[in-house]
Length: 264
Image 1 (tube, rainbow, N blue to C red):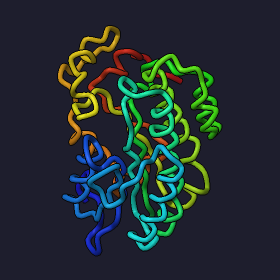
Image 2: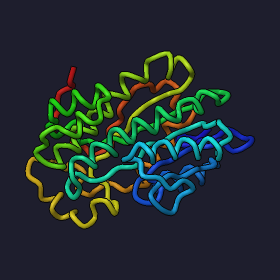
Image 3: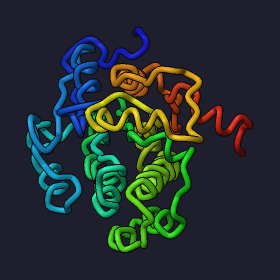
């Protein structure tokens, strides 16, 4: 099997990609379909499942609809749906970027466990989880699974909420990935942490982001959604069997420039 290739020869395996209508989610959908996967997209529009994952009703509807569409068996889940902290209120950022992603992966876990030959899930975080300050109270509430307490935090900005939500998502992945419910059930759980990627989410603010002081970019050009999609495809492949609970940074060297020493 070549790197990034998804299913083995035979009937198509089924993957769910949230945020599939644009950006990294759309690129991931296209990559997986090119690799032979059957992809069920979830988004607010232009997807097999239209649901608002910032709400409990939307999350519940997503799980119910995907159970029907998939026949109760999934081989992969990519939780990519999210919003920017620069242009959205902290409440929406926390509800969608952290709790929506967690609810997606947790809610679909029984269908991943039903797959023969193992399954995989990838949460799309951000290098902001590693390079930007987090709110301590918000981080504690997110990791405790207390959505209302997290929303009620006195957030300094949507940007702070975004960094905190994404850091908590990585923490959730690392804590859950090594448990009997995940790796013990032959389900690999990992995260990716993209840096500046040119997507509709940030295209309008690209010049502002590029000019942000203290945000080094050793690779002088931003990343492309297709590059993140390739990494995700690899993490879902059999070649990534030994990757469990990892957070793979794909940011052109920003995190390495800010943190040149190995953090232990």
